[in-house]
Image 1 (cartoon, rainbow, N blue to C red):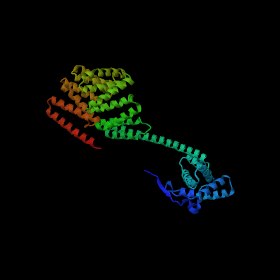
Image 2: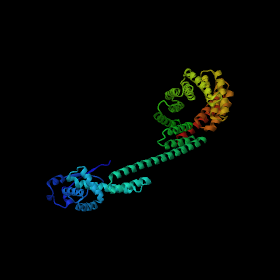
Image 3: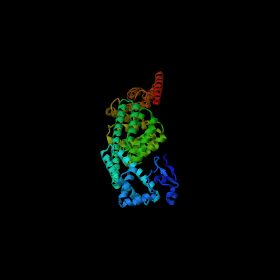
Image 4: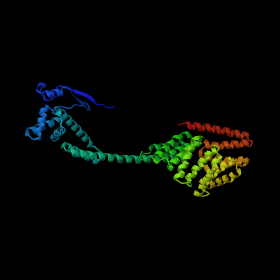
Length: 472
């Protein structure tokens, strides 16, 4: 912490300055100067003017009358103090206008001269300004000060300051533009890593993109945070995704308000992540709030509202609240089919979800046509090797198992496993789920050795995944 130091100027200061003994000074001067203290700035105390207070006061009066002798003495004093004669004349006016007591004139004059020289030294530095407008204004301010045109100097310095601020704003905008472009490049690297199924690298790239976002574009950061969280999720590193989505939600809630659709999106994403971790109690209020926002802001028949209905219904199903889930799934399917058509992947998702609810309720005959239709849509719209196609294959195989059609389920599980291994890797959690399902099927078929080998394989893959996920 910076501080001011106090320095006591001795009793003989003014007598030394004037070259006279204390006995030659008025008693009032001796009394006042006997213990003069002042604030020292940069270690300097006011210097000498070589005049007693009375002499200095007389000089000021005579100079104001432009007496020739006074003019000569002021010229000599200006050289002594290192300032121009015009400046010294201006100092006299300043002292007069501020009613400085006679006994303080010498000290104040010395201080003013010192401050003016410091100011001129600073202005000399300003000549090297990069901005030509600022350099010109600073040079003009220096000339005005040398001529003791203080008001002109003040105006020019004010303009120079404004020019500096404007230049800083331009540089700031340029810097933000480059930071934004750097963030975009980092995001492109993230998308490249995603295309290579290198989700850890993608997560790192999107996290860097979020860090590079300029402060004047606050809503770009949550987009990249969401992308980073999605990559962490796809990498199976669920805990790493939580702080990313939590921050994205906080940013959007602050910038857009608690009832904005983008806030609902963040609520939905965080709820989905909690659900994937089995934290159903944490997910429930997020899903409920997201649905309420979307219904109010977007309407009861909006596709995003259908998505929230689907997610909340899924949560109810996971909690065993099947009766609560049913009307939400049914409503979501109606909205989606109306919005996108009967052959859209979004419709396939709603069909799949309602079918899974029917299966959980034991309504296997009702579930079968929905799963079959969902698989057909996905194979046609997304392709036979898409991860969502694998999900439909896995779910239809599960229905066949529930119906006792074990031989019909086996090739579906096998195909789904091959798709997931290719798309997400052999050790990914969702790949291991299908592997576990196939192992249970082999056990149900009585193929105990095959089942044991699959279970053992699943454990090896899990260990590999956990080891890889723990590495920085």
